[in-house]
Amino acid sequence: MKLTVLDKISRSICLLAMISTSVSCSDRNLISMQVDLSRSVSKLPFVIALDQGLYEKYGLDVQVRLGPPDFDGGIRMPSKSIGARIRRWIRFKTGRQVMWKPDINISGANAEIVRIATNAKSPLRVFLAATDCVVRTHIVARKDIERLEDLKEKRLGVSSGLHGNTGFVALLLAERMGWDPIQDISIMLDGNDIDALREGRVDAFVANERSYATALQEGFPVLAATSTWREPMAGNSVMVSPAWLEDPRNRETARRFLQATIEGTAIFHQNRELVMEILAKWHGITDRSYAETIYDGGQWIPRKPYPCYEGIEKAMERYDSNEMRRYKPEDFYDDSLMRELDESGFIDSLYGTVQPKSP
Image (tube, rainbow, N blue to C red; front, side):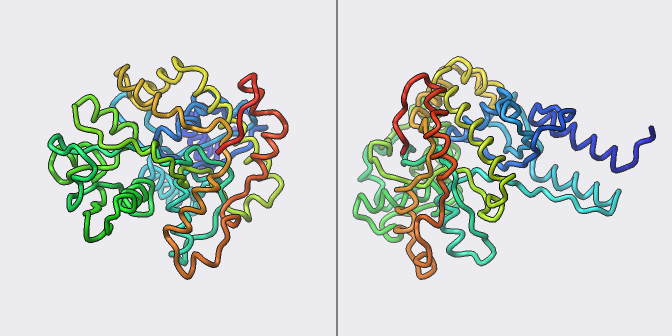
């Protein structure tokens, strides 16, 4: 049988999905879906689910767009730019528009809440689950700085905005120290990495687990482990459109996605050696002590990943505005699927014992 151009393109796209997610396109019973995901410790349960075929186990053909690995040797997925080139090629060959339109986004809820309340083009999305509901970064400084008090009038590096997790921590630090976040400390965007510290572009930075592990190896002082502050935060969450979720078929898709992710979480907490292998395979992290530091830093990942109730409220308070006051915390989450899975005993069955409800 002679293949049409569209047939060839379909097979090429399927092959791309197989390479990126290890999914077989021959099984037509799988529910196809698209997911946007970045790399961080709090997102390891999703990567574990990919690696171990858990999404397929629960009947899903998941195509993932994932950022580059931390180090050489890690698995590389199709990037946004490569995906755009593929879509342009398909449009050129067929005249048909092929869009990457993820059904599920996994990202920081804090920034999403602010985006919804400040950007007219940002649609409302609700959070179904979360793997990150408390501040748990570290504040790392140059080697001649010994105390948090010494950061006054210094430069503190965060990621790309004050609405993200690291920006939230910087504002929280200023509040705890009684500082004006504009006059008493310089919060520097795009400065939350070890290179910015080495090169003197910042005096300290809010470090995630990977940067923290590097800082320990290189002897930089750690001024604070923010997990000891016990402050709630709306961190990495599973986000969907409320309209998408209303469709019973999509609701079932989301339920299966959560099942696979929760099982990936259970593997994270119960199979240390497998996680070491996955860190090497997917992230290129082959240094055992480095990987151990990252793994140990992820023990806060909740076994029952309910939405960040307190963190959502905290975000709404910290970024208060006229528009924010149009919303209630309940507008930003839908925990019905998590409650169904929890009450059914599904989560407890993965651990062989009753787990406390999170957060």
